Image (tube, rainbow, N blue to C red; front, side):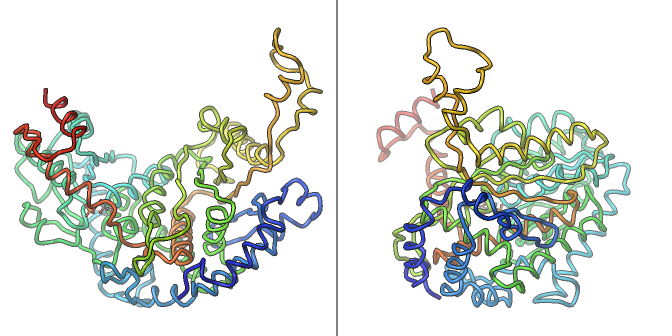
Length: 527
Ligand code: F6P
């Protein structure tokens, strides 16, 4: 394995960037090559991707694929999929792919399918139980964001007799309004925590248990379940209905495990298995497709190209599907917790940038908020549009308008508009004071702003599973090129330790040894 910047391909890419990449103009590239869309669009299982509005050509992709080869992406991928230790700082294998492999295929199949069958049987039992109307998932990070993202995305497949609630924050403003509307006799709490030690989740679980007992609840076995690798801790909490998983499932890769229980209750056995099957189809594509046609690999390489050669620091995600409104938040953990690292696997400081800032909102809402900056701001921010061909509602007119907007935004980012063209148009509102040429400069767009467009035929359990797995493998690919461990998250530990130190000080007021800012703020919030 060789870190990206130490390869011959990296040097070749620097030359390619200086000669062609930096000045590539998308408008000219489309004018030059009528086959650009065909040659730069790719079909992976469940997901079609148009990369042609990116600042690449086929030569760029060839250099990037050379980079992946030289960094050992295929060999490392294969070792990870076999179950070798891919998370060295925690000494763990990384096998979320095993969670969606069919029975009898891949590592730990008996264990995986044993828990899956039990978890889905329990989910079906809850779905059939008219006495349970509300399910509250208490978890944070990977024990929250996956189910919280998937459940609304698959609303059309959900059991509408069950209300799903998600409590994550150690802030009483999160759990209080949820509890206010609940009847303890009709509520199931799921305490979701890989470690069963996370402060936020444990604190909220204690609040839920106290509320349940104080409101006449007695049957903890019926009204509480746990999803965790720490079955003993769940038992010590008093929960007897527990679904386990394993240390080789990372928190942000865990929605396919027992952590998916709220999803399974919402969409049922068949649809949950469809979600897994869609992800597995993408896993096979990642494992088997040649790198030049391998969509997650190409997207990971594109991220490297933009981050390390163009110097772009962020990427915006714009799902044109309201059900995917939590996808940007989900991707923030997946991408930024995985690849937000500043040392390589050997602990050497990295001389280049890693994870971009990932952010976004569903279209068209984002258009009326921050798209101004995407079109005319000083930073170039690649945008990822996600379009869905067929909706699961009957509002055809709304859907056509939604699609037209998504397509138009990608087009506008690329095409831009010169000041000359703007000057030739009648401004919608004339300025009494500004010169026409000055106004035209305000109304012009630089264009040449890159975007990727994904198209799903329909948002189903299968295509959603494929889309999420696509992102997982993309993050892995860029992580390998950057030479980092994408599967640990030591960066969250310092704040946790300091919070433990500050908690008793909040009660006592002791500020000894604190910096004056923290001491001053602590005194202020106590007062
Ligand atoms: O603090 C970060 C983190 O460890 C995430 O990686 C994880 O998804 C989250 O906390 C929740 O952890 P747990 O599932 O163990 O409660």
